[in-house]
Image 1: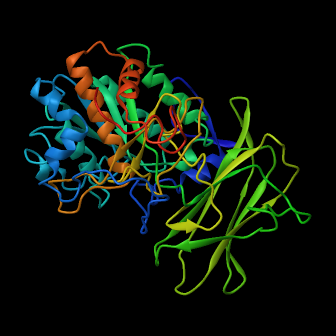
Image 2: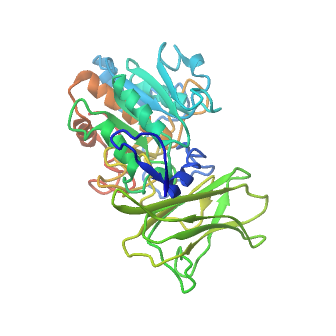
Length: 447
């Protein structure tokens, strides 16, 4: 039923289900946790004074708001701590050494071609600059992985730990690499490297929540009398709004017991553009499956996604559908955090704007055994590498990694759990008291 992919750490001889393997082929497409083309706050709250308006002039205000400036004055700047940045975009990183980045970094590619700069993107450099700006004395490790290989991602993480990294961060999302609730073999492999967070030898892992709140649907299958899934009552077509002429990927995944057929329909012509079947398979005692399609949108054409149910769904089935490269008309923000941020032992960050409003695209929980997201950070983040500030949840996760490094520099014996507790105590609650699925435990800052 499956093909062997690699030799999983802690999971020797794991055979990847065919449905999983097919979906993973699309996982590298449009998965940077950068914001969609349209940004808008989703509700109004009182405006608070802040200074995130220009790239360089406001760097000091950022450090003050996060509580970092005070820690720097006391001499805690991330010294003695290694932080690993796992990303797909490091082209031109050498030109940033000694300016936006430290003079020296340790870099390794886990792609088949061994090229750290293969992709024409600087996304990883931006993440690294955020960490260097906040924890300037921390040592940085840079790593990428083969896009269609979760095994190479796991090896990159294991390498970072073997190099002494105490903190790792990733602002790239791979929705099809989990069941959307922190489960699946990829998460199991990562747990073997990260640990349970109760030891100082365990690695802290921060991840972006993703920008999928407006392009995700999650819930139970609801067939009509023709066995077509209903996104809402009486609606079996879910319109997709592509971002211009960019390629669009549609991924369907989750824990479910019956087969489904995923279809993308050109509503202008009435033809099926792409289709793929999802066949659930037993993975570690759980039934789950994944499939994906992608298409090139035609100008002035309208598109929609449909799911045909090919069996009898269970009341316990729960599926997720994600659109990469476009918006989804019928969407659910709850449960929209994808891999790796849906993992229980991952500290996950959404984002808010200068008014402390959750940006409408910032993905929301719940997603795993631990409440998600964990925190939110304010974006955009001012940069030196480019004039345009860094925004989206991509800019939030490295802020969390940097603050963890600062805490560790003062107390190297801190465990990931204790760091989470310290940040939780210091966070500024933005909604009802305690955790909520939109802003987590609140706005990130140091104690």
